[in-house]
Image 1 (cartoon, rainbow, N blue to C red):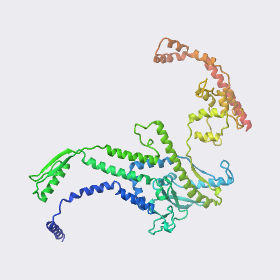
Image 2: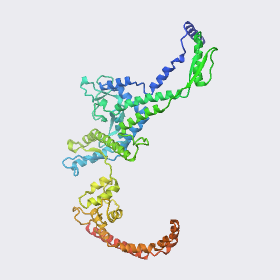
Image 3: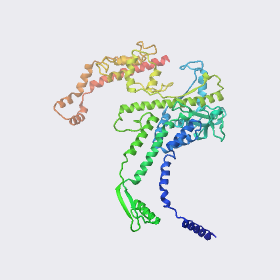
Image 4: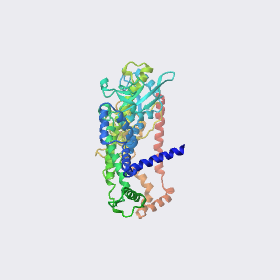
Length: 555
């Protein structure tokens, strides 16, 4: 039965062919297949279709736009890389949960607000994978919003989120305007016209405004769709160019009396020569080879580079933090571009912090702490401050401390160094002496006499009385004020180096001097220098013991 069926099908096919042989060959559809391949590079998006998608989103139908947005980052490696930089920059920021002001101030918050903040912080810490949550919320930068569904649990004391599940943007729709929607009201797509209303306390819905516009227009991808489309066309044209680059133009000529079968044979031969370098044609036909196809990859590369520079500007605010052209990529311009990038990061961090405050911390405070006063609600912040350059700060503070009152907390914040807690060990260094050694003894860069080491130390160690001259560490101030004439140091140094100076006058090379120093070192007279240093160490030790004893009695 099976054999008969196969034969019947074959006979039917032969009969159909004999009734009317098809003109041309089946492979003639190859240009169509190539067009489909090129269209696949942009997911079938054409300028006209893209315009229709954007217009539909503006009218409230966002589904096609959201589907397109899902493809952009997957298909464009440059957009993926730049957005990844922007999102992952948030992971390096320190964050805190701050108490509400309550009845107090920002520096002295209400004790009730502090207790609420501590309780909420403990509950918040139980949320798993904080970094994943930040990245999921930052995924709203492109499409304009991101949705995380909350899975609540009870740990015996409090209701806490067990997990935050990220849901695709294509699961959502806008409430139609004729049903009271305002172009910002999101609902779940359930097949109905109005959609399913989101459950209270069931979602963390982050709306990220890259553009100040209604929700369908607020995402960054609204700016990137056009360069994405142009890059797709440029890549397709580039791929097609590479297929024919260097191949000669092949022209087949046949006599006017050639049959359809002979024309097909000639066409097959021309195509075979292009790929196999071999082919056969009927007698009387000719294949002519014209000049090889010319062209350059420069136009395609220029188009791709132009689009990618525009994408970098839209995502990171500049190009020098991602690309360098070797011409304008100076260190100064790179620093300016990086400052712009930090401004964008700060904006992203503040928007995400606001969402965490309103949609995670607030529910925790109300559910578990019974907070009814908005002033007691804690709030979430990222630390987006840029720590000052420590070298510049160390140079400026001693000068400023002598003429103004500088809070320690402010100096620590500018330096990015936390204040010590309790009896935590701290580093100690003679900052005044370091200041004096770093500056020219006669004048500094401003032309004014620098602070002397004792004065600089006294300024930095001034007590909380406003710096009226009383040093917080009198032992250190006394040591710094010790009078050691420069002539004394010069005499001791001359005794140490006298023999080397003599050999230097003899014209010896640096290598010879080093070799001589190695031989003379055991015989150098260091007695006077050792005695002076021993006295200084003894005085320092005595002062230290006396100061420690005085602090012990005061305690």
